[in-house]
Picture 1 (cartoon, each protein chain N blue to C red):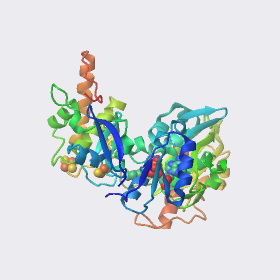
Picture 2 (picture 1 turned 120 degrees about the vertical axis):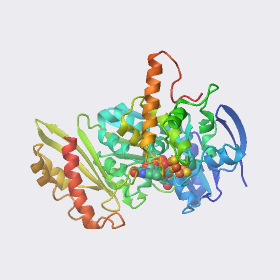
Picture 3 (picture 1 turned 90 degrees about the vertical axis):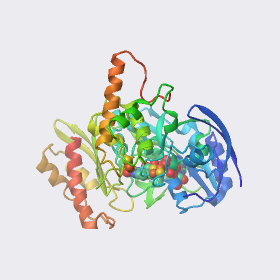
Picture 4 (picture 1 turned 135 degrees about the vertical axis):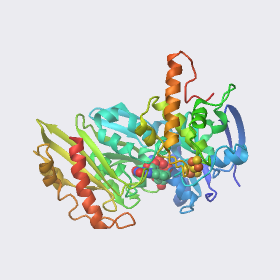
Length: 282
Length: 171
Ligand SMILES: Cc1cc2nc3c(=O)[nH]c(=O)nc-3n(C[C@H](O)[C@H](O)[C@H](O)COP(=O)(O)OP(=O)(O)OC[C@H]3O[C@@H](n4cnc5c(N)ncnc54)[C@H](O)[C@@H]3O)c2cc1C
Ligand code: FES
Ligand code: FES
């Protein structure tokens, strides 16, 4: 399968990339790791005239700390996110979720920012970023702006990033000493989540002191479940108590129906996986 | 048609060519360079048959453009055997009967070499997880897993003896 022909540029600075994107107008497309875009181009579901490759802009890649935040550059590959000591220490939910993405070859190319901007409802990183209270840094012709995770995911494959904008980095308040788990349910190896659950907890004296719970593929965007987060506070690490606190996690959700399962099946899965995620994390 | 000039080192040789930006890396390897050892299976980044190393790490060459490899180093299945014969992973596949039709084999071997580079002593589950991106429709995977285990053990034994063929380094 061969894409429609396009003009290609590989700028080495963000300013250059923004100019190229502005010049291309509606027909421009950003290329990050290409692990979602190249299949789309090969299937000719999209045919941009200009492809602007961010792969040579070193400033967009890397992981660092900044005070009480961990910062992940948009072009940082999944493999680096999954194995970086700063992520393991201060954002271990992100490491857990990233380890479940696709397979090693795809994790060597695919990027953190690309997966978030692509915003596939079955993608594993949006729910994890939502649970981590991530803040997204976006630049465009009008300069830089920041968007909170709650406002970033707008709809299926649609985020707050406009056509003429670039996601540069994602900042997350450190959740050092929090414990996490990402439960991903699939039928076969290397599959997208039928349902996924991201859980991260702070435990104090054997009880849950704070919790963040977010769901993958239970709607067109990732869903944070604050009612369950509240119910978990004060909970002992004990199966019955956690089952009670998480029982309502799928209430009011409107999950998709497809060959992998209908909405009721997905709601049941979300309940089981949330209990497992909390118990596993703790 | 607008062409772009790229310079890529493939299996130790530097090539400079004019390519269309939409040319996939796997097409460049097979059609421009004639390196047909790298195969196309699914063409949708699922099967792993097209796996090569880009600067030493495994990637699916059907889901990358040749222009993205400009200035980088690519190693294919055709570039891993040394002057003194097969790469240890090739030998392990051969000795453990880890192939039947052989279609998945070039990609399996490239993915397996990368797996041992990251984790020189994987257990069975780690090998199965590490080869998640490679499909085999013939073997049932048993002998592939056995081959990777045996390559790991052979290398560990060599390291103990002070020999120096590190698995995962393009030779
Ligand atoms: C076989 C297969 C299995 C997969 N399985 C999973 C899975 O289980 N879970 C999962 O979460 N993901 C999975 N993925 C997707 C993978 O995570 C991709 O890496 C990711 O969706 C896209 O990231 P990318 O860097 O490759 O982006 P690209 O494909 O390059 O780009 C994706 C989209 O985002 C835009 N974009 C990218 N970066 C930016 C930026 N910085 N600013 C503005 N726009 C940008 C592009 O224009 C494009 O529209 C799978 C992919 C494949 C091919
Ligand atoms: S041909 Fe590239 S993954 Fe199947
Ligand atoms: S040996 Fe035939 S596909 Fe693996």
